[in-house]
Amino acid sequence: MNPVAAIDSIALFAGLATVVVIARGWKCRLRRDVKVLFVLIVAMVLFRNFSNVLEWCGITAALDTLEDFTEILLPVLWGFVLYAFLQGMAGDARKKLNRSLAAKNKELEDIVYIASHDLRSPLVNICGFSGELASSCRQLTALLDKITMDEEDRRQITALLKVDIPESLHFIEAGTESMERAVDGLLRLSRAGTEEIRIEKLNMNRLIDQIRQSMTFQIQKEDVSFSADDLPDCMGDRNQVSQIFSNLIDNALKYMDPGRAGEIGISGTLEDDHVVYRVHDNGIGIAAENHDKVFKIFHRLHPADSAAGEGLGLAIVSRMIQRHNGSVSIESQPGQGTTFYVHLPRP
Amino acid sequence: MIQENEVVMLLMAIGVLIFILVNRRLIMRIVAARVLVAAFCVLLAAYVFTILEGLFLGDLLNFLEHLCYAASSVLIALWCTKVFKPKEAG
Image (cartoon, chains in turn purple, red):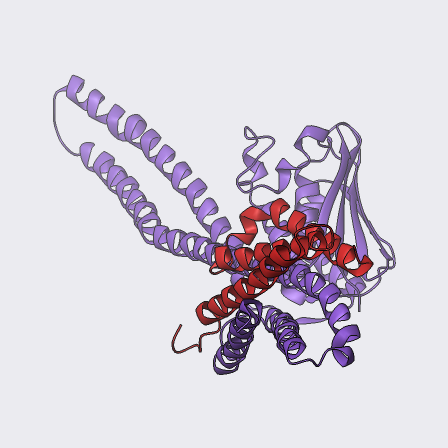
């Protein structure tokens, strides 16, 4: 037998064996496009081997044109199958990364929720027992007046009961209040990311009016003029959107410029697939280098200002807007006020 | 004698080889990638022999060409046995 014919026969046998292997393992985990492309490659190889064997049997002319065609197609198919493999791997890696990120995010939110929830009990105890201690000090002071003792001892005990202990208690109370605000903020932040939201069409004119009414006291106290244009509707969760604008207005009220009459204005416009609301104030403004930082958790631009809160308000705003597939940006200059741009889906 | 279609298929195969070389790190993550790449390289060698046999050593290079085709077929069969496994088996 001609050695080339023998080799071609082996190749034909290998091709046929490949067909059997593919048929038996068709339900393997391989991507469907890779499978189909590879089957085409195997078909081409098989055809080539088959035509070689036919050539030795003297049957060639009928298959010559087809053979030329398959020879040119074969490298193209190889290119496609390898490209499909890479695409599949990239897609799988992306899916894996997304799953991993979602799991980590959920884990972090759970940790924040559990930690802040569990911190509340000891805080309540500290607050309660501080009050008890203050009450006991007052009782002791009253009892002290009825007891006869050395004047120097009385003076020292009175100083402890009326000055030192109340001062320490005051620091404890101030600390626990601050911690309580932080824990409450963390809980709100955690809930902002996890609580179920119900997306509906929102009448923003009505919603902003309700917010204005609920904040009338603060607005009047700061002597701020509040105005809202005719606002377009948007799609969102009523509670969260209300919280977003309450936090932004509250933030504007906190950072008014004491040197001029305060103004807060809200306007909105419809754009391609979303609505842009602008919350503008003429407050003290924010330097450009701090624009990104204001949405970070626990970040405070004015830490000395006790009225400024715990640095969670804008972090909560950002988190809630993200959950609405929206975005928030800031435009501000020191001394010229601040404008927050809130992008939410349009109806 | 050199045929045009043989040159075209060789050029295309060289294009795929460049693609493999450029993406070699990723390609090597494919299951039994060495077998798959070897199957392609042997096929590429067959294409080279196909062209060369028209210039010199016709019989020997024709034999090598067919040998390479056979080797490529066997390597493809081997790769398929490693990859085309039913879910419960793999």
